[in-house]
Length: 469
Image (cartoon, rainbow, N blue to C red; front, side):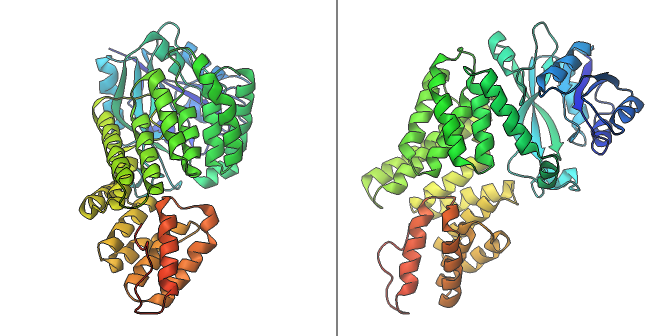
């Protein structure tokens, strides 16, 4: 019978820790907690729950306490959770069953980021209180010779696993993460801490692209595109010098994301090709290729053979990403792609191709999977406007009218179709005020400009050319 040890790192987690420990009751055989300097009741609560508690002073290195816990553990498998994470209700049984089968070296769990601290697990798992789609993270590892976490931050066993060519399995286990709540991140200043530790890791490991990829993605999330570009430019020349087992996907995702934001589809395609030549096929690379082809298509003249060809390539690439996700996984890192992301971009591509039924289906599938997604709402609303259902579009858009320009722009398009030109002008002006923030889909720049020309024309006069994207 396989034993399972929960390995935890904690400091001042008396508020979060009880929920985490309660969620694993009956699922784990042992708990080992490494305390890195708590001044609250963390240690007391852990011991009361039967945990083995070790102490290690914090020295800006997450891997060291994770490895200390692994050294003390007696389980055949190790489960790595943080105090702000919980096994979802019912997940313990699936986890035990997977460990009993013992047919993998690395188990990937579905992590769901909650939008708020008081969200019920069902709300998070269902998507109503979840930030983006769930991600697969390597959290269960077989305890065997040589296993070790690496990296002062974003520590992982990835290098060890890829080097030994181990067996990975996606487990039917969900984890709810409450620490992604903006109030928690702000209170603990997690971003500043992460950035400082990642910069230190890049300095300590200047030939390893892993830290460069993490740092670039963290800077992108913080809105520092210039800083992210600087890191990508420093890390990209290192790709060819990496050991064959080491992944460069994170750095590639950051490089492609920056290229997408500046409208450079060819750079996205070059990034995808480079990593695929090095490491083989991957759903992230298919997805990025689809996005790159979509972007090149937007730049091509409407109705041109090049646009049609690029849109067809985008559909093929996005379809390949979906097939790989469904049949070839699990993938240790799939940071750019998800089923929802593929459906969103398929919706855009079909819309650009004038294929409204296909666009409506794709956006509808994305919204059904992620009911709180502003992107899915905006996409479906845009397709509904084109399909002659502006009232339904407005109902979808109302909850997402905020800082981004897309919602206001599409509300302007919907109200214009309803004949409410003054409302349309007001919404369009609000979109224009936010234009510097950028549109999520580049083709909406063309929609903005065409709609502005239409509303400037006297009522009843045909709109100028280029009304449709």
